[in-house]
Image (cartoon, rainbow, N blue to C red; front, side):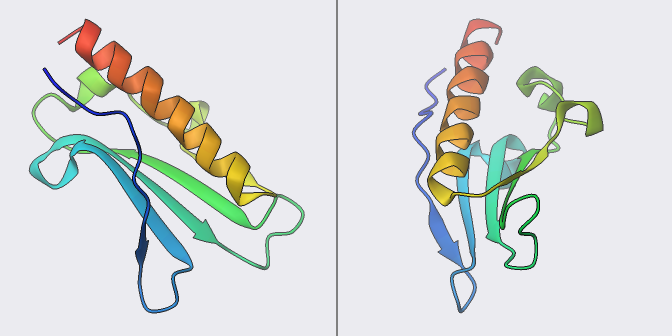
Length: 101
């Protein structure tokens, strides 16, 4: 199984306030999507919101599960910190997915 954990962020929408990076083939039901959105009204928590979603495919549980206890949605004050955290999560998910196919 060859999965590249390197996240390539792509702007979504007209104004680029939303970015996505995908590991695997999320739309085919195999992978994880990282969504980063700038919400300028969330200054207490931080204006950058990172959402981690596992694709709903036949083997989605092999990527692990993200529920409220796992905090699939997190807030950051700096975009660079959100991107760094997303990459760290991607590295772990891919390493475990390859280790336990």
